[in-house]
Image (cartoon, rainbow, N blue to C red):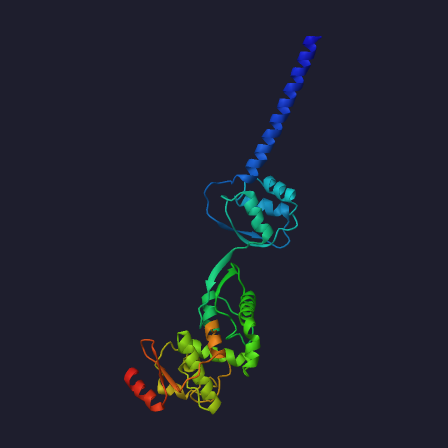
Length: 313
């Protein structure tokens, strides 16, 4: 009887260990398949999730692209997380050196592939289009595409770029809306002036002084005579304006027509916008930028003309 009991106990014990080993083996396999990357080192590649694709199709494509060992691991992980309905369409930077939780998290959170783009202050709409290689749809965009560093989707489109840049403009301007209303000038007038300052001078102090000069000229009915408006018309990259260009018949020609031009001539940064909003009063009526980039200020036209003869030969 003792032998029978012993034999029975051994069978139970053996069965228990076999079952435990099987559970351990399965647990290890799933842990290995989910948490250990397919490759130790691998380059990132673009992986696309199209609209309407579900968990099964996404997991099949991940396996097909060589990003995971087997689709079952991805399916199991996402189901256990309860996120099968949160997988988002888009293009993603993925690598087989990422484990399944890392890959899944990107697709679940919508962490799509992006490109870093810096739009410099003073860029025109056309220059932004050339930099991005796309057309920007919409009217009256010049001046309102805020220059900044952006992270755009890799498959960016013009509508999205305009939306993001305009929203950034509104965000930057928001703290000063009340001050703009109190200034007696419209936001559009402030932006136009800021665009002139952005193209004409470099430093904050120079912009504030030139803003004071230009607003003062407008008040007394003097033409602004801003060289940057001429280069905006011609598209020439030069600081020397030929006399014939000053005769161009365009509302942007501030030598020929008094008042502000009808719209901004570039997309100014916040420093220029604030200089237009908070100009510095002075006794100066004229200024001149030398070929070396230095800005000189003068009280009289005679002083200004003497400086032109000296520096702009």
